[in-house]
Image 1 (tube, protein in one colour):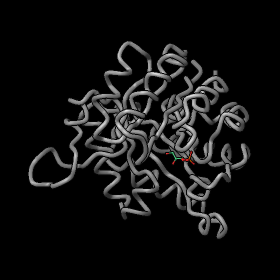
Image 2 (cartoon, helix red, strand yellow; image 1 turned 90 degrees about the horizontal axis):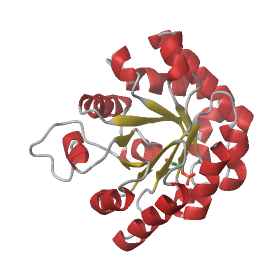
Image 3 (tube, helix red, strand yellow; image 1 turned 135 degrees about the horizontal axis):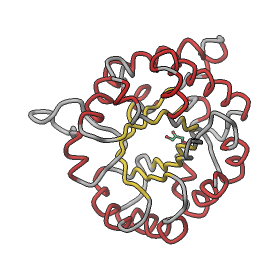
Length: 251
Ligand code: 13P
């Protein structure tokens, strides 16, 4: 069976409650029934309002992060159970902004991933190299390490529910998109690594999104590469027409 495409919007630290709900409503009207896996990841305080706006559509609700403990004295953190309670089905784990701005390590990302899976959430597990790492021909090494350490202790049954996202850090928010060849090369490499870890059948089934300056105008050629199964979209997911264009490019 061919893999389904999956386009998700990561709204990052943007929108207001009003604009978030408006954006969600607009997306429901435009692509709410599109035959593709779809999700949006609003900021935490807007999850409930966006959940209500998405009701009845095929657009899933995701969070941008999760903490790796169940409950207790962890001021400011949000548990996987809370996300589930708030209507989330998906959660982004290991986004590069959390790795490089907040300082999350592979070990922390792994703990978050395990907790999300344990709660039945679908983790959107992000990996990607820095510009300096690409220039030093270390892309393969860095991405392999992130994938291996991130998935440590994840059973094959649980791995079947993981979505990967390859987001080269130099392409995020820069307007510099990876060429389809550059992206496809790393996606194929990630799939090969997944094959080593979990066998060919599972590796064939897992979705791997590309993220980094995806727009309606460049989505088609990316989304039609053999190992690119969708997109994780930042800036362009804040504009309903752009996000719609990306989704339509993948249909
Ligand atoms: P941009 O689409 O704004 O480059 O962001 C990509 C991203 O980080 C999605 O998670």
